[in-house]
Amino acid sequence: MAEELPSQIDKVARRKLDRMQQADPPPQIDKLLATVIQVKAADLFITVGSQPCLKKGGRLRLIETKTLDNDDTTALMKSITPDRCQQELQEKGGTDFAIEFTDGYRFRVAVFKQRGNIGIVMRRIPNEFLSFEQLGLPDVIKRLITRPRGLLLVTGPTGSGKTTSLASMINFLNKNYDRHIITLEDPIEYYHKHEKSLVNQREIGVDVPDFKEGIRRALRMAPDIILVGEMRDLETIHAAIEAAETGHVVFGTLHTSSASSTVNRIIDVFPKDQQDQVRTQLATALIGVLSQTLLPKKPEGVVAAYEMMVVTPAIQNLIRENKTYRIDSSIQTGRKEGMFLLDENLFGHWRNGICEKEDVLLKAQRPAELAARIMAAERGELDEDEGDDDDDDGGDDDDESGPKGGTMKKVFKAGMKMAGKELRKGVKRGLTGRDDDEDDDDDE
Image (tube, rainbow, N blue to C red; front, side):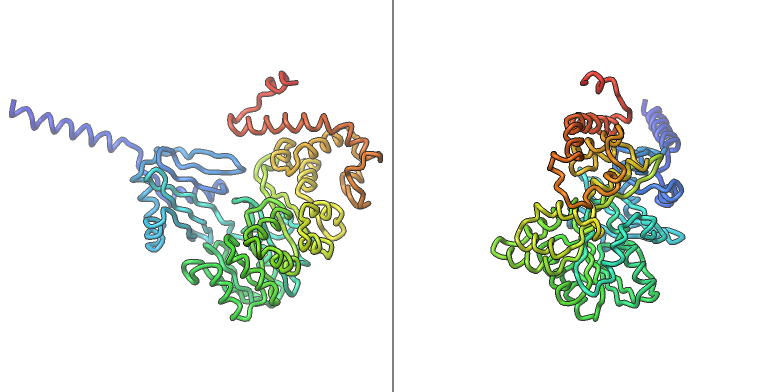
């Protein structure tokens, strides 16, 4: 019996070795990133218990490779993460940085802990700057960014393309104007070469400790333009407003979904006893708010939808007098100034065949009203002039005595029903990957 024991151990070891040799090898980061570039995906997700996953056109797609364990994700993390960021990961549970892969392709990286394991999300940064026309940016943006002073905010949820829009604005200025531009970014994503302008890019945690300190230091560097990558706290917001007041152009971002909510968010950050003073400062410093979101485009890809507010004397008064609830009405009647609401832009995407109806309704600020407008257009009850320029007459849309109000009143109830139906279909498709019209028919 004692002689048989070593042979049995050898058999067990050989079987274990055979299983290890037959198992799929762990994925290499180079191959994963090459796949992202090849298929033009937006994001790469790496987490324990799943295969690596791509996001393209708003949809998730698994990469055919082994299911990852903690050893795999840890090895992938260590292959790309600088030592200082690995230390931050251990201390704070997460870290952010950017890397350059090959041929100028760059990725923004977020490494984090979840359930005690390592997770990674990598976003592909386009290696070329997109033009204003390619992004569909409002024409008035060119006029605003060449102003001698003022605060211009680009807002939207995470992943809505704010960084890309700002990079295109900086690139436009860099190619056409002689300016000294200082950017404060966390991390640096797009690299700008010195062309007509001088562009100095400072990374938070590497070149400067935080945004507030970066703005304070920038004011001593004779800047013409300061880009603040994220206005995330009271100190940074206050410093950005003061920089705009002192004769500089300041670009900033916030995670708000509309112009009016952006103004409210800035005011609400401050203590109650300071809010009146901040309203006065903001009314003077703010020159515009560009809010944006991304939605699926037919047949594939994504497209941006925008809301544009240009700060006119009328809007300055609304901010100063704490009447931000009337900003949307001023935007509606300010089309000649280059202003428009998000839902107007979404309606144009649907009408021009760029996006599906349910996708624009899911992104709408007022889905029931937009659904009613779409239904009126489908029935031919919306005049071409109304579709292109709803508010040039400056009238009140709530007035149901005119022909437009009468039409909208007729279809509003139907629009409410259609909005609910399309929203349910959109959510169901996102959860199940299929449409099920039978349930909606039953509801009718």
